[in-house]
Image (cartoon, rainbow, N blue to C red; front, side, top):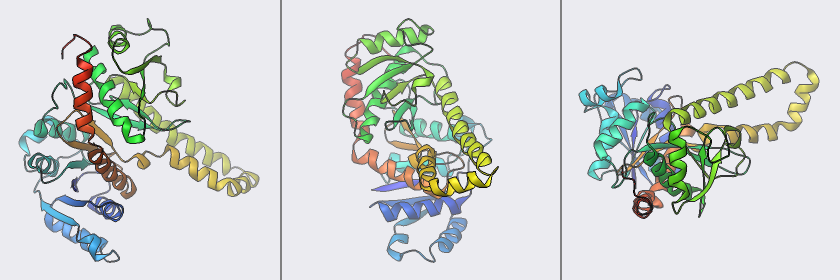
Length: 341
């Protein structure tokens, strides 16, 4: 199994991405293509490989890509003009069958556009979307869409529910409970998009349990939460910001007294476990579901640990044939409602 890694994307430069790739090959049976400026990548790989096992290093392969899509570039325009960019080359390897997945911590919009343009959509999929994992009191919950589609129709949200339910199998959930994110639990709460989506989900074969509110996201009573990309992205960014702020507030309070510092030392293992539970790096990246292949969008500030987990996630998706499952369930699900994309 070979994974194509955009080794030029991200805030920390190629060295962090290469370090993540090394960690990934140590824990998986995959080989990894490092896509980017070949002379630069060779320099960083040689430096990173000094203390690494030679057999591990031999499973990293550099493929030259002369250009890079910058974080501030227009995504659609960039992939149209820069067909030889690292992100485009990564997805082209997937299209050719040389790799099973593409992973990037670069320009997220360009990654989305490159994935859809290069690989195309699965049959029946109106719009691919991003599915993010959120930690809860009882285990992970999949939220879709978290930014790919700002404006949606009911059928799009219905398809997000189907695709996210398939993806939830990655976390050993046989019959995922699906909730629709809105402003109240009652079926009549929400705008027209939510109300019409509710009707589609209610008559589908999905395990739809009804509406969920923002306060329910972290309770763990659902396995999948559906919303449009505008709402989902705000939810994602608020959650990331809250987790960071909570850790900083806690640190500030601990530093205010010696007694608090002593208490922290005694409870340090618990604090470390809590930090791990809310750290996005533990979940790797966000998969782009609905394309003919696997694409993982990573946070721009992803650490080597996050990149490693994103690559592992891509391998797991391929091992479980998530796309085949999505196609099957969409085909069957679409047969239960008459609305078309």
